[in-house]
Length: 263
Image (cartoon, rainbow, N blue to C red; front, side, top):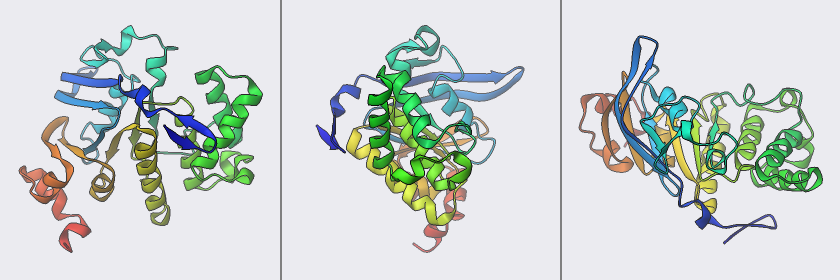
């Protein structure tokens, strides 16, 4: 058990959720955007998906979360389409969007947005859901004062923290984060990275991180998938791949990273 602001969280309950793609191909109309993708993610794993714009990584993230559907993506052995949209397994996989401001309902305060998610996902009465929501916001660093504000009165970093708290409202087993720091100021990015690390460690939550930033991938993940033009070029342990990249594209990405050049 891990203690969080007076509430207990059993990290063992998430072990049964596992997402696997086998030979995944995907098309938008006549245009094929993914080719023979094989990845797996589960509780306790931290997987990084790296690639430039147009590599297919965001499409893959949407397939992993069931936003897009393919029979070649299974959750506990079943395609997303066979799982009830209101079922617990779907709720155990949550996504954090790139643009934290746009991902939030502009008419709701931070507390209301998270409370609404708690009510839907945990089936709690409004008052109890409000207490859980307040605890979640506090756990991600959103003050009581800020929790009463709407998104247009919050900073980008605060909006992303609210989005993370809303994802945690579902008590997720896996969180898929699509470029979660790219819309933030440099001074805030490290705080969000550390917060995601803390959540993954303390709650036993699996993390799938989609990014074009190798520094973020290096800090947040244990395994890495390198993509270009919809194909996987290289996979392996993050530190090993970045220290000794085999594919020319991965070597090119590493060569552009300031921390690699100064190493």
